[in-house]
Image 1 (cartoon, one colour):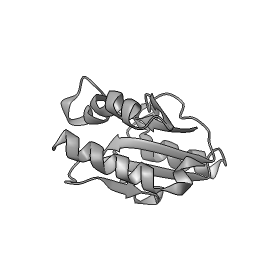
Image 2: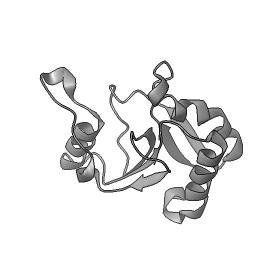
Image 3: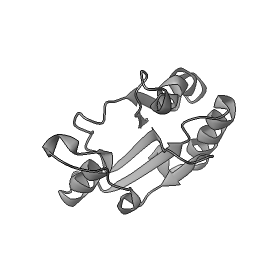
Image 4: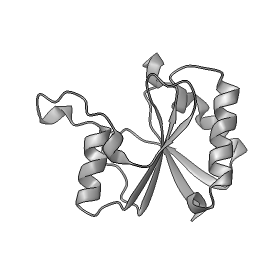
Length: 129
């Protein structure tokens, strides 16, 4: 069973949609294991890491596989490392080989966004390995 990691902050409205969708994802896609994780903690080390996360300023669900396209956030100290930095470092160290981020908008029709996620996960054979 392939694990899909859900990122998001349930207390911050702009970043809460992935967490809100978690119960429906679990019930409607039982062939996957969905786990909510905190990206400030250690990310799992897997050959193919699959994440669902909010991407600001998009209107529809997008798939991101090139982590070099992730815009870095301003870094002023060692406490400012973000998801993009962490993924790039893990890849460089050989702790992950492939990353797929299913990016969802911060707002929109939850049922439509859920439908798009389900279509992506159901139609991607390589996700199920």
